[in-house]
Image (cartoon, rainbow, N blue to C red):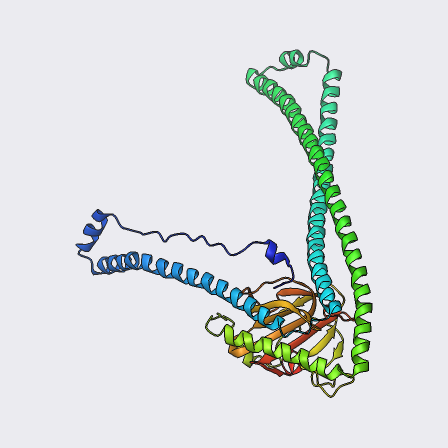
Amino acid sequence: MEFPISANARRGQVSERMSKPSIIALPLAYEKRDLHCKSPIKGLLTLLLLTTVLISPLVLADAGRALKAHERNLVMLKQRVEAIDTELARDRQLHDHESRKLREIEQEISARATALREINGRIEAQAQHTRQLNQQQEQARLALARQRELLAAQLSASYQNGRQEKVKLLLNQGDPTQLGRMLGYHDYLARARVAQIEAVTQQALALKELEAELAVQLSQLQTLGEIQAGQLAQLEAARKERKIRLAKLEAEINESGQVLQRIQSEQSTLQKLVVSIRKRLSDIPAEFRDSRPLGQSEGRLPWPVQGQLLANYGQTKRGTSLQWDGIWIAAKAGTPIRAVAEGRVVYVGWLHRYGLLIIAEHSEGYYSLYGHNQEARVEVGEPIKAGQVIAYAGDSGGHIKTGLYFELRKGKNPVNPMHWLSKK
């Protein structure tokens, strides 16, 4: 089974290591002393403390078992989703060569786009660091120049007063106590000035060395970004070529009158996927902590992306009598796609015409579906929050226009998402 590569896959798998609960015990002497205390309040506090001490290991053990159960559920969930995808692959309309190649190219583009986005992020972070370093270096230079001016003024004053400045102070001062203080101040200021100049000089040298090092790193990252951009451009060119050949295939289907059959097959595949997910994952519970269940959020859900509607729910599909089960929202490639509600990801995969598809499970048996994505930013089993970025818009699935295909289902049945999304 093939899944689109996302940044989450590179972040690693769930750790199998768990810390053992620690057992807390009171000193025996403390227990005996307080158990025999005469004060009822102290006795009650002692009893409560002892109860807490005895229960704590049990609570920690329960927490450990719950975490282990959660990890097992996550593994089971991923295995079952993989089995579902393998099963659907036998029925999926990907037997023709062009469709298979398109899927491979789109998955490769998804991986490259994710890598390029991460590299650009590293470049920007490095550039920001360099800008901060330049500011610090400039401040150090100004401080150094100021200290040099002060030292020059001090040396000039010393020269004007003659080279025997300490002797003059000694001869001109009548009060021995005051004379001692003046001589001490004189020596202290001179030593402090020299030490401060030395420190600022060292700081400026260190900053300069660090700036040079960061410049090398930034250059390397920029070079890597250019390589990635070149690879992505090559893949985009290949994708356009495949789309042209796929268009020829679609033309052949139109001429043979198989349009209705093909669209029906695509819708049937998606419905079978949702049914399989409900059936296979029914015994793997999900925790939803949102105070408002999704069933009570009609008209309140945030939009997954802002844009013009290319197709509306219930609208007749061109050239057929079939209707849209969701909405198609126009968006530029790479626009963040956000989850509409709290839930967990139960599917990340590629379906013909739906492209890179993400399905999230929500409370009360609701599901949200996000298709045509360029990249997926989540993986199966991952909990999500409303407004969280889960993908980036694209045109996967063999489409010319970029955007997001969005569905909302109650069980296996689609519902009108326009009734649930907030008014723009």
